[in-house]
Amino acid sequence: MKSQVTLTTLYKMKEKGEKIVALTAYDYPFAKIVNDSGVHMILVGDSVGMVIQGKSSTLPVTMDEMIYHTCIVSKAAGNAMIVGDMPFMSYQTSIEDAIANAGRFLKEAGAAAVKLEGGRAVSETIKAISGAGIPVQAHIGLTPQSVHQMGGYRVQRNEEQLMADALEIESAGAFSVVLEGIPSEISEKITKALAIPTIGIGAGPHCDGQILVLHDLLGLNDRHLPKFVKQYANLLDDAKTGIKQYIEEVQAGKFPAKKHCY
Ligand code: KIV
Image (tube, rainbow, N blue to C red):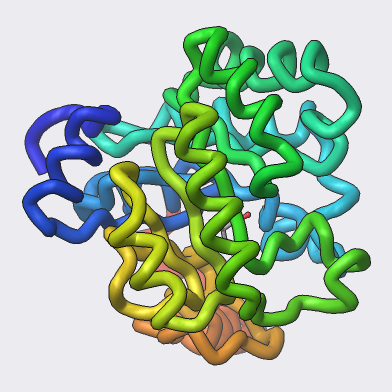
């Protein structure tokens, strides 16, 4: 990928039927690997709560934590678009809070856009944030911040509601929408109905792009993986093998060797 990915890039990709590839990242070394591999969009997801902080949901993640992670990811980014994920209760309390918090991602953390969860319920918020000049990516279907309201992490199948959400958030000015945990046939219809790009996660192959949580894709996670994840590497095993060898060599007096000494 040669040039900076912008909203125009994404719209053109949708028009031409070129798939948009997105991944999450939370720190400098992995953000650099992701960017340098040619991914178009890096989401600093509030999944940081589960993936990095070891929490059982995304709900405890704070604005300050998101700003911290977005800052370090932005430092590593080259051409990929950086999207900062608005954490639980950073945009639900008032439109004013939503604009101020969204603004922090661009002003303090180097993001080019923000993401927030919800459909029709947050359309006024999307309108206000994008009206302030901040590109907003919406997120509908399985929305992890509503885990308690949904009664768990459940696939969302109500086509009528999902389509209504998608159409309204597009009218409110969202530049893109993440479709999570939605049957493929419904995502296909939504993708065809919208002019803005859809980015799927557990939403089948017809979306304009795909996103996965980086640590799931790399096998850096020993938790149960959802059905929609494909693991492309097994870094957990590689890391354990390397560390075990280090332990053995230190204990056997083999490390450090002469070449590692001054
Ligand atoms: O927080 C996150 O990582 C996300 C993606 C999985 C879409 O919202």
